[in-house]
Amino acid sequence: MSRTDQADLSQAEIVRYSRHLIMPEVGMDGQRKLKQASVLLIGAGGLGSPLALYLAAAGVGRLGLVDLDVVDESNLQRQILHSTEMVGHSKLTSARSRIEALNPFVQVETYETRLTSENALEILPSYDVVIDGTDNFQTRYLTNDACILLGKPYIYGSIFRFEGQASVFGMDDGPCYRCLYPEPPPPGLMPSCAEGGVLGVLPGMIGLIQATEAIKVIIGQGQLLVGRLLLFDALHMRFREATIRKSPHCPVCGPTPTITHLIDYDQFCSRGPQQDVLAAEERVLPTTLAQEIREGRSLVLIDVREPHEWQICHLPQARLLPQGSLISHLHELEKQTDIVVYCRSGVRSAKAMRLLKDAGFRHVRNLEGGILRWAQEIDPQMPTY
Image 1 (cartoon, rainbow, N blue to C red):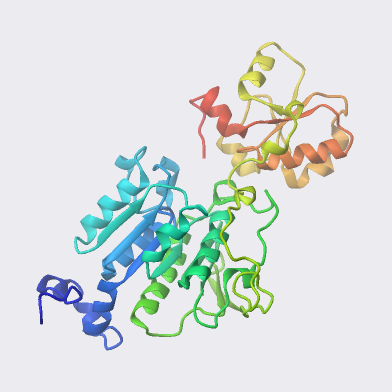
Image 2: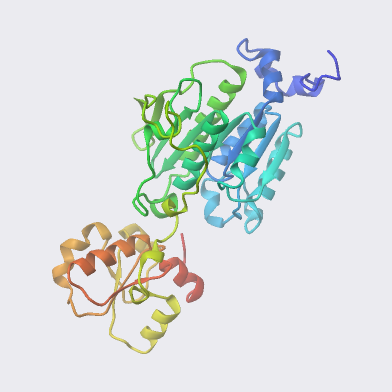
């Protein structure tokens, strides 16, 4: 074989990929396609970990990674791309080191940024396949729209608690993500994995399904998850499928699209508290609350998290009234009482505060940043999650 052809496989690569080469569906031609291919991974976290590792191991020639986060200790329960020694370091630095150690034949390109409407059309065009490994709606819709505008396959995956989904969008005559979910959900409606939790092995399962679909797209083999939404329930170990039809009214891939340029969806981010919509008198900073407690101010602290979260940590003298059952306990509270509600980060407690206000409670405030911010600013010894 000619050594001038970049698609040719070296002797070392032939040995490395030999279990692929003896499969007629892959063979030398398929492995060359993998070597020539470029895949962009948006997110180097739970889903990005198995994606990066297995696509690199499979011999994808060029991997791009987009991420702005640093490795946190709470990531390590599921983000197997990173190690304990990388806590506090950039996820991209950690990912590059791990991928290059796994397969030196893979070219790694990193983009330490958040994907936005301004940079998406600069980053995506040079990649053959785009894979979503994020956990927020604004990036998901942005990625879908960019892929449709650029004509790129978009491999979708999402995870929450024990459940995951996967599909392939943006293929010829196939649907896109907006055919399934035309518009983003209202702010704060859908909790993130940070709020609701995720089984540590679940992103491994969904990420491997995404990686499998990416390889099939590249080598042109098998039946893709086009027009099909694969649903996985880890708790009951069940797979189901739902049909997704290409919508004639889709605003981005329909015959008369109304979305012809990219926009950002920051207002739909469900990762953080929606405290920008709260009035100043409806919020209380941890430092202010701590001072009020020290001064002996008469307060009722209500924790609206779940009992299993309460067991991890809670504020002294707080009362546990989970958000879902709060309405049934309203008769136990005095309407003139000074009430402070809190949750993990401020999202659920903001909703609880609204419920109390609507029920006639006048003096209700939401702990800004929730118990996480309390731990950061007031009690660094408090366990966080």
